Length: 286
Image 1 (cartoon, one colour):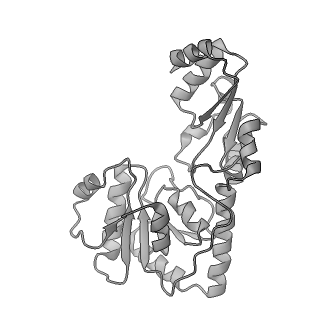
Image 2: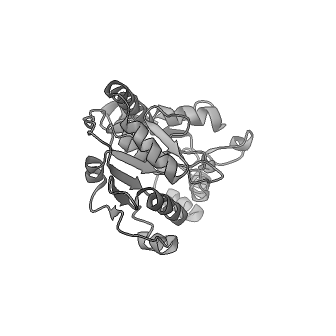
């Protein structure tokens, strides 16, 4: 990457370079490679996804920013991330800016989903690892395999084979769930509650007015992108708590549910800011 970036800069005058920022090794080589030939190139990083405490790559030690290659500016998906990195990331002053969430499709005008009579359609969004898949499947089987009160749909991540997790989990039953047949939009239209362990689908759920439950799978570092916020999100550690929590959400008064729903949308917008003309200007002017 270093030599490719340097070769590019020798052939093309690169005034600005915008790249997805995760503070990975290849990014440092991109910065050093371009900088070795074109010291005037403006480097702009874009933090493009949710962040949890497990994303230690985003956190710098107190003196690290003085010696590690960093872009000139880092654009973030929303004010929640900008404030988190400012408070915990040890980034130089003036480096972090809020832009918008290009990938997550927030519009700011999303129709809030009407509350169903009962929360019976459960969407489980799988994301980061095979281990997460297996642990989630075990919890879901214990919670729902002996109950006809719920419909469970599992949405795997496209990059991780679901069949491998089923084989490892060695479930006693395979008929208590179905897998997602279509798009995330269709899944969210179908669901009235969303379970997640690390996926941004939890955020997208609350932005649509769907309550979310974080599955704490016992990892040493917390994987919850919404850690510290619980207005329209609940957390559980086992199957018994999961069933109880769904019942507790179901029993909320209409007034409290609507209040939490509105706070959820507000939080999601501040986390994954809508794509607007003014927000897009940040990418042109950074």
